Image (cartoon, rainbow, N blue to C red; front, side, top):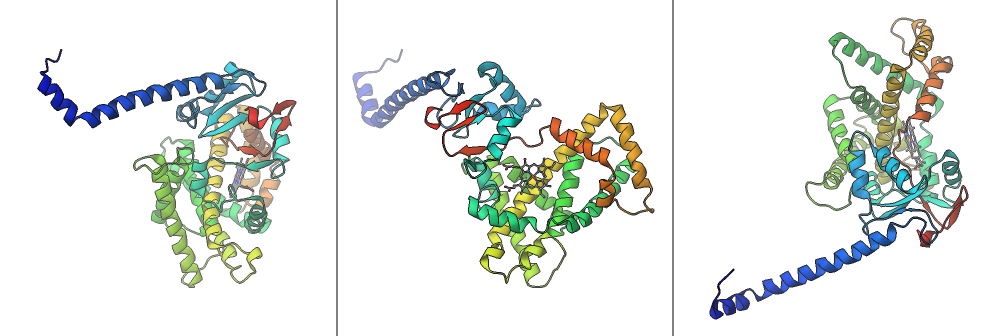
Length: 393
Ligand code: HEM
């Protein structure tokens, strides 16, 4: 026990009065907040209490975000997050992630009902961190009217003609890289390989960037942006969000430089960016502003790289366990062997390889290369007989 004299006590109270007040206030506040949080936790752990979708919303704003993040960064992935909640609440469940209530729709029919009503009953609704990363003019974030225009202008360069050129470019680079690996004789991680391949290919197709040091610089920044997509959106130094937003700013500078060099005539190329810049003299509705071009360059690189490389990785994984499919694919390689030496595969070749297409489609059916694609319900709705009342979630 502290043995303090009256003077000493008086001295402490006089000199540390503010500290005492703050301490007492903090303890009181902590007690109050935890009581409110506990009550809200209890109230939102309802299972069909009051109608609605079952599930747990957890603490205000944070909700179950930490559980989702911990599942996605573990080897089990986000599937574990979904699996557990299905056991606890049933196939349909709600949760709160990054401050927003999400309802998980567990079937193809449900998904179809939602996506066929895009922009009518549902809006695109990516979480704030994702929108901050890809930019407000990205196709993933813009409102309906802008979406229609940007989508139309962005799709034009993806004609059959340019796809055909691109297929040949991609095949050439893929064969070169595989030969190098064969020569090296070492094992490698398929996902790392496909991530690098698809990244280099996207940059080549969109911006004609082939210089390795510039590619690695853009790659590093795009990875930081990807890593920041599902995070708490606060600019706190050291966090993934902070690093991602800084990387995004660097990327915008890099794109601005490339656009500047193209406009000044110092550089020219036949690629996606050039086709956008050729519209400079068009009326506003027929061209993209620079911010729209840059946000969507970043969106295309990230959307194109992560999906395609994951699909490549899954197809190798599934084929590894299926000898029969491997044999049938090898038979189709006869088409590739029939090409003159050194010639790359063409889009026409792939049309003559229906089994290859089947393998790709089946891979995309069984794997899930896109983590989630959320929609915001604009009004109360019924999906597969489940009535979702927004105010009751
Ligand atoms: C296996 C490959 C791919 C799969 C499975 C895939 C899947 C998807 C899905 C499901 C969406 C809808 C997301 C939503 O509406 O919320 C989407 C959108 C999008 N994807 Fe892909 N994608 C693939 C490859 C690519 C590639 C190579 C690119 C770029 C060249 C790309 C660019 C985009 C863009 C820009 C959007 C937004 C479209 C819009 O809002 O209108 N994707 N993708």
